[in-house]
Length: 222
Image 1 (tube, rainbow, N blue to C red):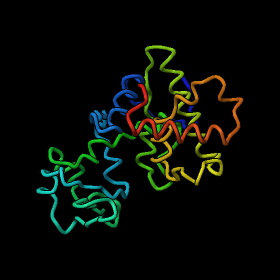
Image 2 (cartoon, helix red, strand yellow):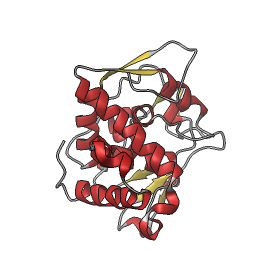
Image 3 (cartoon, rainbow, N blue to C red):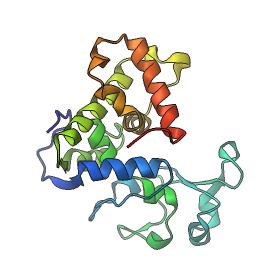
């Protein structure tokens, strides 16, 4: 199993096949599919002070969420709204420990997958204690050595992005854990190249930016 900076003294939770997760998550990032997270009783993302984007196409969610909880976000596009959270960080739609609009929840909620932090070997943030507990518990399985190599590459990418931000052209790099983990998933092939260890940091940073751009343009492979 790839070395992971996240350790846990708690019970482990099956995260599923790493290869299947990686394919599904990359498809989700492209808007081609959703994710299927084995959350169980965990509601970490519902109690961690997340502001949830609600898009115009989230018609069931817009109908189910009281208007007083929705704020326009014109900087992100026409019709896009954000649902805030309660003073305790809980989603206002969480009732008795369960999502009261689960079947109508926005796509943002459907796409959220904290396994990406376990894949990247990082935590979700200092204030995301509940999510971090689950992140430490996730354990992937591997059908092939190629899947293990992909996991190692994602962790190497995440570590590089965190440690060498000054090397990115025009400061185009994410600063929050979610952005770092997602970028690592988009560009991990850069770190599958055995020559990456001999490349200058500035060259690697440029390769990461290019790989991310290619992914967003749907020119990347799996």
